[in-house]
Image 1 (cartoon, rainbow, N blue to C red):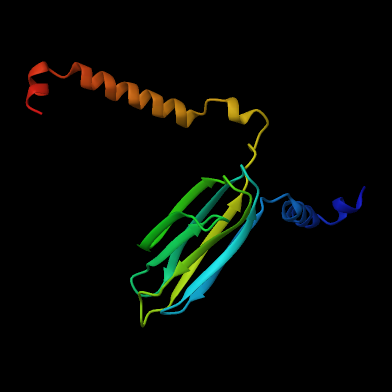
Image 2 (tube, rainbow, N blue to C red):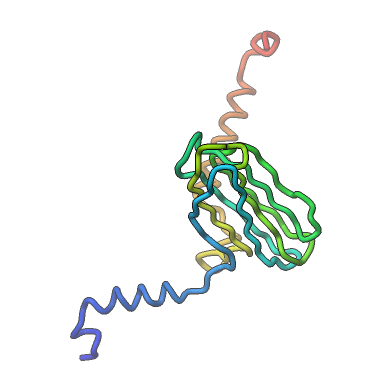
Length: 164
């Protein structure tokens, strides 16, 4: 009998350690306080051609909204939204260098916010080998739904088309 058999609780611990050591995509995930009338910027070095994504959400404060923008290394604004509670942005880097993403609460003079963001660089590999080439049940269901909708529209009487 091995040592793991004598300690049955060690198997989940070993699995947890393996998962923690698993390769993660570069990026950052953070929850931070954004004071009233303030702006906070973060920076990430991105290779040319790499795909990156930014997801954010205001968790607490005021109307649960912030301004957010992303700039490329040349200072060009590639994403900008105002007074959003949450949003997602995905982009493929056209230029290698440091990308800046900022959250602003400058429009609020009395409400600080708590903001969560997740910035990931790179494409996530498929969970299973060759998974990218397979049709999933969800895509099959979506295709069938679209075909059913198209057939329903084609079966409508012609006089109902004129009433639109």
